[in-house]
Amino acid sequence: MVFPTDGNVLVGLDRADDAGVYKVSDELALIQTVDFFTPIVDDPYWFGQIAAANALSDVYAMGGIPKTAMNLVAFPVKDMDLSVLRAVIQGGIDKLAEAETVLIGGHSIEDKELKYGLSVTGFVHPARVLTKQNLQPGDGLVLTKPLGTGIVNTAIKAGMASADLTESVTRLMAALNRIAAETMARFDVHACTDVTGFGLLGHLAEMVSGSGRSVRVFAERIPVIEDALTFAAMGLIPAGAYKNREFRAGMIEVGDGMARERQDMLFDPQTSGGLLICMPGAQAEDLVAALKDAGLGDAAKVGEIVDGPAEKIRVA
Amino acid sequence: MAATIDARGLSCPQPVIMTLDEIKQGKEKEMIVLVDTDTSKENVMRAAESQGCQITDVTPEGEGYRIALTKG
Image 1 (cartoon, rainbow over the protein chains, first blue to last red):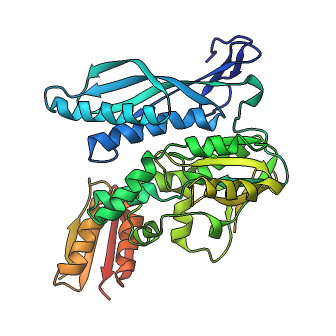
Image 2 (tube, rainbow over the protein chains, first blue to last red):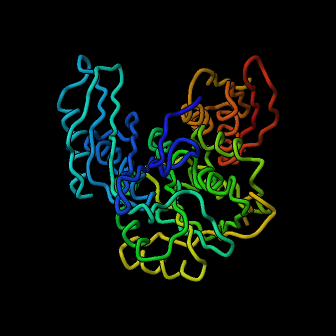
């Protein structure tokens, strides 16, 4: 397939990234992204917040500031009360307000199943666009949210998660990556993405592919939701986690003796996960400290970029 | 007699819930669980192991798997 393009496309379809970027002038580029999905929590207001946080995250992951948004709504108007839709949209609006992003339109259709998401546009300086590329030897990798939301959501569906855990995981998914993005902007960041459906190692594999570099991942330092380890041991693992592992099996080497549950976290599909930031190794611990100061207590340095063997991820 | 749980056609986490319920409440010491995806097979085996059960046999059957286990 040939896609139309022009000289101002800075990030397009030729290589998968979190959003598209288009240069308007030497000072300004637009970041454009769209994302929507079916409910991942029962409460419609929280679903709206999570969907908005998730859509906004792609702009943060590109190093940008979100400015405007449009709603995308599919709603079973004959089978569901309109108060549900109102709550979903209110959740989205409140999250946009927190991100100082304005809602300027949208579109809705009738559908069998509720779906909600947003198209978000952000600004970035053309020279400060962050993509999944540009990994340098000696770089450190920093993750800003704990892993395990896919597994906990499976446990919630099974009725095995406590009310407290359900609430804390819902808040985690609804948390904006804004503070993480603003904090990393003070550092010399080389590359960034956000951790979503492919899991930590799936998204890391996208960064490593074509880079000519390799990655060492420190499994023990990776922040996880502790209860997710227990649920993984009980087999409450979403199908996506198995698919993610199988898809990238050729790139990933896992050290002997690592607990199976800890490996599961690395492939667990995340909803509105944290940023995965690649930057000079010497600054990585400073960024972690700054993130913790800013209230992101789970932030951690989780790996480093090394030379060869090319494009492998070694987990130990 | 082994208790048989037929979890075919059901998606995660339903097969795990059915397996755990039978392990906790069923009277039979032997159990057979029928599943039809690799995800369900893995998850049911983990669920059983987490409750101290022994997996005695896993065989492909039809489009899926037949998992035999003994309660611990």
